[in-house]
Length: 194
Image (cartoon, rainbow, N blue to C red; front, top):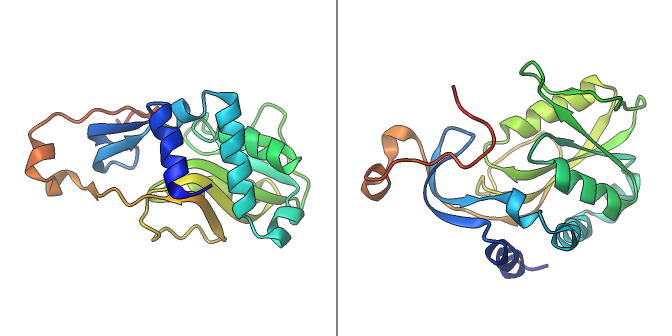
């Protein structure tokens, strides 16, 4: 799947938004990708997961025992990646502020894990999920996502395979261009900032 085909999927589902957005990373942007919308259609979600799986090198793809994703944003794409790779999929969540496996999910010591996200911007959530997976006994051999918003600069400590890398500019609150500063920021994501 080429970049324009991926963006066409986002546009078709009204998941590519324009305006003034406050991202979960705390940065501001004129563009927002609402991955929950692009994934709400099971056929589309499945196609996107198959496309991500196709980007994984053969040796990594064949070594994966489990897929683990961070809740909430990674749950659907993680499940679809498990289906595409024909392995079990589970998720980590933050009941007390730190990612952990719950709901009876567990990893066998040494399980080779693919950590899957919807969008990676700074990589903070991905690194936290990787740490939780390792603490649970898994070995994260690669990470994948629908979208890399880092401009290719994120380092997750493992090989990273995004379906598409988008370089929409992001800004700190004190760096806003006048057109963004003139409008209030909307927080469309699921995590509220205190």
